[in-house]
Length: 300
Image (cartoon, one colour):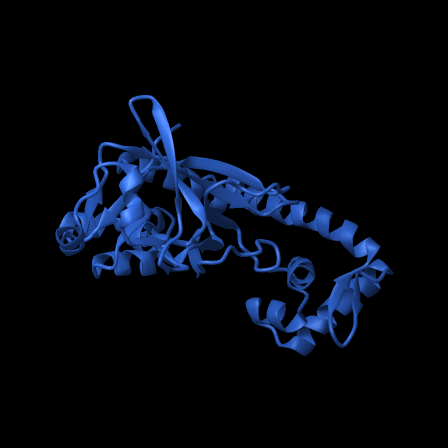
């Protein structure tokens, strides 16, 4: 990597993370070295790009404009390098933000084929059940479920995944099997990551009915909700990807199977303000096709 490209990449990561030490670690540099390189860049340009205080590192007005231009240049350079090779080979590091449950259940089992196809590419999985801040955390692509908040970030819709209700056979033997959504009021309900105080909507024969849910037990993660349901603590709502192994093993069974629930959309989200990395775009395309082939998502 040339000194100029290194200084540009380092500046971008300092600006995005607000930290010389963190940006330096990512690029294999000490904090003093990172600070010195960015200072040299500012001296060459004859303008301050960053404001440094004991509490924070922030962009100046000139730095904000420079960052936007440099991010586009670096993305274009990476794409040009790959085009020049003429092999379609992906290189570098791809940082993927993803919930821990989806990563373990669906994403990691799909990685071998993608990584075998691109042996020069390294992947970092940032597994977190809270949504990552893409720019500051250096995420190249994040996999997110549900309605996307208004944002300038680019997104690719990968599909929609069906929701369903599940419970353990032991729970249903003890408490009975509901045959209509209204009967859920007489059951213990496990609220998943979305939390209590929401409505579950069911559809059948062209009509819809909504039941307000106030779970006695609430879990902030899908894995917690599924473990609770498997332990006989009640009825949980999840998506097909969230309980596939438990359904296959018989640890959980579907409840109200003749009713349909709203689907959850899955998106690949790319950081705002810069072109998506070629590896991030390729990863989104691969995952779309892989999930569709496994009947995990619907196209609409």
